[in-house]
Length: 219
Image (cartoon, helix red, strand yellow):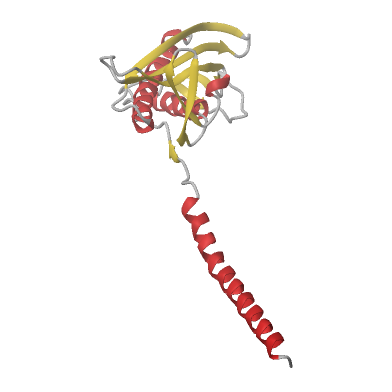
């Protein structure tokens, strides 16, 4: 074989071997890079405050009440935790979210609290498919973390708004309706601060809902 030609073949084989080795080394490194850059799963939070203690010696009314699944304004009918830094603009935390849409958690919370109150013979949750004498309809109109600018004396707060009506099922008559808004200061201007304040507001919302039902349920 021509020595010159043999030398060229040897050099070409060395280059191919070097390229193959570089490819083998680059593969694992690229994989590690993808693992390191993978975004973390968002933190998940619940609305589950300690419920108010039921009054002792309560006599249950011979009625069945169903807590209908709360409606929610479109901006709040999601697992996203909403915050507001400026008027007319609503944003969501990207690394934190609710475990379920807040309206669903509030509906189950209200059903449990009304059952514990001992006010009714039976309290049905939102998913029940049974007859009821009364139905409590609610709507979540606001649940957002309002963050003030640095010059404000208060850093941030959570605003929770609800509407409600108590309906007699047999006649479809609205016995009473109303609305309220609760504002609770947050201990920080981030998602954990928003969640803690939202739970405080939810506890007060449940207390107000129980008082509303107690006042307007026919005896």
